Length: 237
Image (cartoon, rainbow, N blue to C red; front, side, top):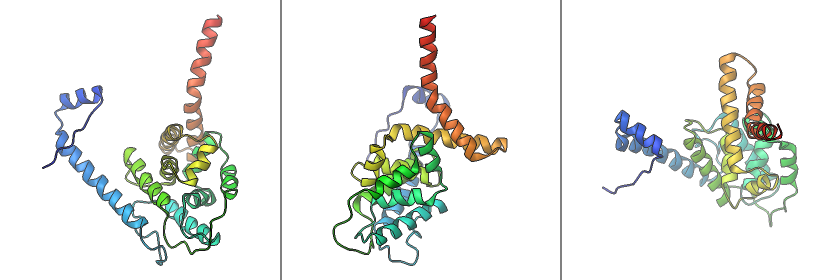
C-alpha cells in the first residue's frame, strides 16, 4: 500500500500526540470524502449541458449556487459562446443578486455592479456556439470551488466558495476581472471566514444575518489598521 506523508504544524502535532488520535484513520476518512466530492464535481462539469437539468450532478451545491450555474449557462448561450467560461460564472454570481459572495465583495470595497460592468467589457467570443459544455478554466474553477469548501470544513458548496474558486483559477477571465478590481484570494478567504462567523453569530443572537455578516467582515478588515494607528499614537505620545 503506498504511503502519503502528512505534515502538521507543530502545535497541531503536539495536540495530536497528547490526545492519541489515530492520524492514519482520520486522514484516510477525510481523504475518502474529499476524493468523492472532487470526483463528483469533475464528472458533473465535463458532461453535456444540454440536459434538462444541467445542475443535477452538483449535489453538494446550495440552491443559490445552482442558480448561478444556470444563469452562467444562459449567459454563455445568449452571447453565442461555444463554452461556458469563468466570465459567465462570475456574471451569474453577480446577477443572482442575493448570495453571500456579493456581501463579501462589498465588505472589501468592491461594488458587484463594477464587476458586472468589467465582465461586459471583455472581448466577445470568436464564432458562434450553443455552450453545451464548460470551458477548461470554468471546470477547473468549479473543481477549486469544491476544494475551497473542503478546506474550510464545509459540507456544502455555496457562492462564497465559488468566489474563491474563481480567484484560485489562474487562467480564467473571471479571476482576471476580480484581480483587476483588487480582489486577492487571501483577503477574500479572510472576508469569507469573517462573513460566515458573523452569520453564525447573527443566528445565535437573532439579529439580521446580512447586517452582522457585513459588520463582522468590516471589523476584521479594519483590525490591522486600527492596531497600526494605536502604535503610531503611542509613538507620538
